[in-house]
Structures are given as structure tokens and as C-alpha cells.
Image (cartoon, rainbow, N blue to C red; front, side, top):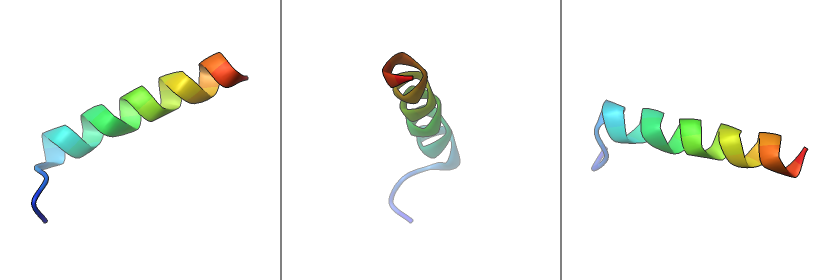
Length: 23
């Protein structure tokens, strides 16, 4: 994978925050 584990975790956190916002 080109992305590191940390970067993927960061994207997941941002995605979850957006989902909550959309809620």
C-alpha cells in the first residue's frame, strides 16, 4: 500500500466525522 497505516486511520477518522455531520 502506498498509504501508511497512520494516514489510513486519519482518513477513517475524517470519514466518520463527516458521517456524523451528515447524520
